[in-house]
Length: 276
Image (cartoon, rainbow, N blue to C red):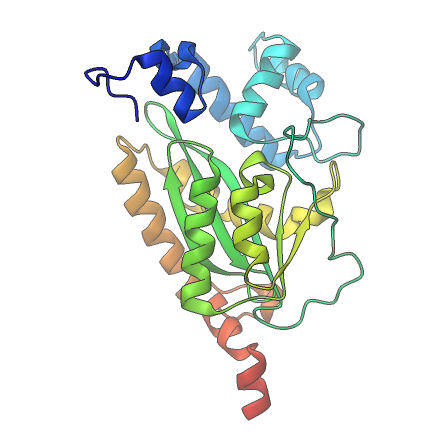
């Protein structure tokens, strides 16, 4: 990236990289403990009441003696990568220049492994700070095919895990995501489309579109993350990986006839079903 000792001026280096000169000199301010605690509480409330927007969250927090403005809550919700799951105009703006693909799962019966994969990113609180967890799941079996814990929301992380999933499990018919900038970026879209997959994106405010991954996040957070206080990114990364391995191989789901995601995935593969 930027080399302050290079003979090329910093201004020119910034131009070549396509970033502003101000970004080179910007030093991020640490997030206060109070703000981190507020983010954690907003995330907990969102899991319990996903229909709540900034106004309702403000009223709910006020009941707990936490007085905070609607706009600040909205800002923190964007940082958490969450939005209320209720139909309303303008819940968020698409990233300029990014293509939004139509939602393809409406009225689609998902009965086979590798028929539909879903990707999403969620906020993971730590003792000091936070990270983001991005995962690919097979919708029919609920199996987590690949995941990554990172400190930023960037398309490169989504590309990395979808490539891992392709390498290990083949190619699905449809890849479904939300309209987050990391998924609408050309880098990610091209990675999916060049494999011959169809790319589907959730509609804004259509809570049913993303329900499969939302259930995974609820399990991850209530069964693991909220019981821990991760001190470092490496601690969060290793502990979440351990949980997701257990989730795939040991955790039974009533929605898949009390099977584990591993059992359901291999049992629902079309090739194996045909051989049986």
